[in-house]
Length: 608
Image (cartoon, rainbow, N blue to C red; front, side, top):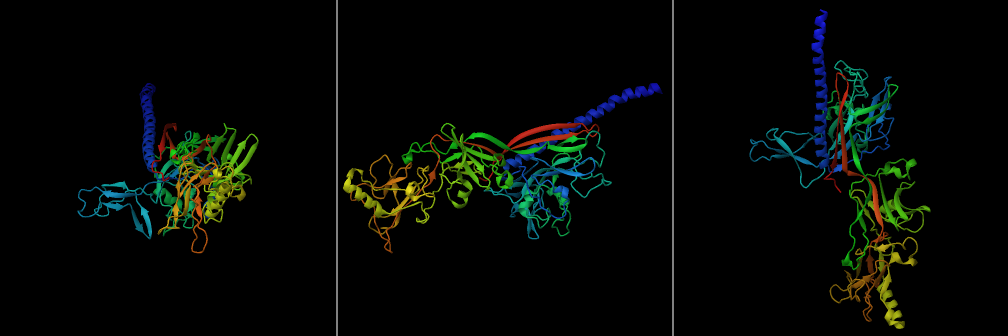
């Protein structure tokens, strides 16, 4: 018998070992297949996205529905939280950085490919159906005419955004906070508990898996009806809410989410977060699968043009600079007051350097929450321009009260820095930048002509460049953007159009005298010149009330100069780095088999 036992052991040991190796290999294959399939689907959909939501970790006020346990609302950070079961059975929530991404796909329509589709009936039909006054979307609804499942989805042209949000997120395999003990069917107790060591008993583990869900933010079956739509999109605990939803037969929101969310890959024995343990308790969780927007550092922006001889100004300075990527993130409006003014409190920064880097102008958010341009030198930091106020009121102001040395606005969506600004409205020009009186210009010409004919010029100094106009209108560091001006004056020729406003033509500053309805302009100094020929006075025409018709001059100004270098550090949503770390556990040994895939996805259809 002893010899038989030894012989059987010698025979069975390799067999058992073979089974173990087979299960380990199967776990590795499952992890590889899950990772590849998930990466293919995610990359395809992200590449087609028309809008991507920010998924930064930011402080957030979690909606109080009156039913959600306090431990699920304690953290107050986005984008998504994970309830973790500690050794003593208590639940603690941890923020999972970059563990969720939301985006909107182009609107699609369904097309029936059934050869037996009734003739004369349209093969195209909408993806949604109306019910109780609301549109509901199905993944692949059958043809409403013939009932066929031989269908395909086609994007509508021209492209337009869908009304549903596609969300990928890391969540518990069992998401119901009301589950305190494992029921007979083996559902795990609430809170993350990974297959750690040999702890793989059925009903104990509750791993984190990757879900995909498509939902309408207005769908009350997924949220408490009183929850605002804006908070629904930003809710970091949407998957674990126990408050009753808005269905006719109300039930917990988390139950409805579990129905509509689909697991990407194999849920059993898969775990996509890694915990840090101290004395048996979890102190931190790190996601193995993440969605990160690309960070770009020290990007030198390209000017929209380097010269424009068409305006007779070959050394014109670009008024618009373009970054390599657009679609930037700016979370600064959501930053707490205590963090305002800290350069780390926002996700982009534009720098303009001048005079071989001895002067630098930075964008920052000040203590008032305004985005401002500040001048940085060895002597300290001084404010220069209030971007927020300009975008709100059109006023070009220095928050420090001094002269504006540098001013620009930033288009986060297009990744552009725009130095072309509208000058302050003088208040007496009906919204125009400058109002000129022909009679005054003519009188000044004749006064000079009587003394010195050679120096007599019909000219005027535009409002922005006239020191006599005082602070608020006079901007000594400004220049006119070449080609941006528009000069409108009365028609001097007798006829049907006599006295009506016409646009005057520009003559290059280096050429000869302008003629009637022509002008020359110095973009650097702000002087505008008309004909200096004696007897070619500007038309002094009176309107029906007896007032002289003026000449209006509109233009844009810029504060950047030749030689300035524009750079930026920013986080762009137009390039998403998807990292899939699929961790599949061998159910026998609990050994994790990891497969890591990374792909940088270009968001091609983003609306900019």
